[in-house]
Figure 1 (cartoon, rainbow, N blue to C red):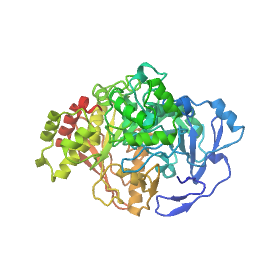
Figure 2: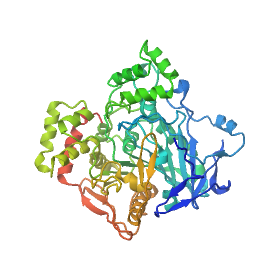
Figure 3: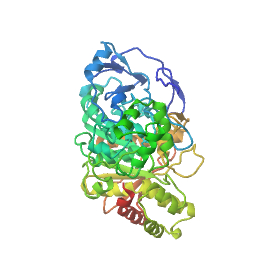
Length: 539
């Protein structure tokens, strides 16, 4: 895999051109002192520094596989630094990747990956008390690499925030499950990938001040599985005081099965890895001795869509209740929320009677009959549109109404519909993750943690700036309007009596194309139906 370094990489900038930054001498502007170690980052813009690969927990290797992350041993890091400034100028290896399901093999990356990238204004000081954005990447909990979604240009545009991007264990390394883990923790722990995220948030509370950030003003943000993670942090125990705002993009409404329901997946994985014999203790010892390549092949072999993959489970401890149930009960963190989805989201598509049970295996034939009644062909322009809406709303889109409606009653909520296709997709549909291309320098995720950046037109650049301004306004003030661009329309709050939202779409380099709309009544009705299926969908 290509080693990326900001020292030598050519950066594709928002302005559509190319600019190269070479290594810079250590200076107060790009050196941070965490007390236990000093790190030198890269001055990737004159006003922005990227500190890459800062560890936030102990490496989860050897006997630490499938165990709760250990807090960082600062004394160990201090001793290893030996009084020298630690180079933090290159992206670290990503966490071990799984297959995307497109015929590729996973396996790239490292287990020693519990690290963060921190993007901060040049010369930021602890006394600056800047608001903080913590970003949790997507990828179905199976793959994803934070280097594919850089934030240098966000800080360059708005050098009054600090941004943290989190690496967390993925696929079998992060979400291996067996019911015996709950009763015998010596075997392993459940949901360790999600626990990694929480440990990163705790590290932020302790150390973000050194980068100029304010631990009392942290907004968590994620897209797809990252959006699902945000939803889980909002309802899970042990999150108090870790954040004060949340942005959930295209929430991946994957089922949260019980560990018992995941046991066949465990058995298949262990057998394929060559560790299927003997007691569970013997199997786990074998799995901890196994090579990364053996485990990567086994997790790829086990992958079979959404349900038959490694992702969070309802363990009764880390995650105690289905998130939608918690939201229905009003049991969530009382923080401002931004939540939305793309116009034409779906992760499966195809005939309703096939695709929905494949994604949500607990749905029965009578449930599917109710879906077909709720999504009649007469409501849609084509069969393809009917299938996309019926699958996309349950899998992704309805989190907008479910979460927005609940949060509007307790705090404040802003919802959106992203309505700009990825221009490299070859389609007019605004599909899943389309906004990532726009917000992250034309990034299209590839296999094994790779990505391709594509140049942007002046119109696309202007739209990207508008999106970033809305997002960072919310981070700075809890409201996307406070620091929006002058050309951008006011983003209405979503309330029970006025289900208004913004439609985010391109205009021209000088004018915004975004407009306000009201959530369609039929969409509200369908999402109420979807919400009523929570126990069958397990999300």
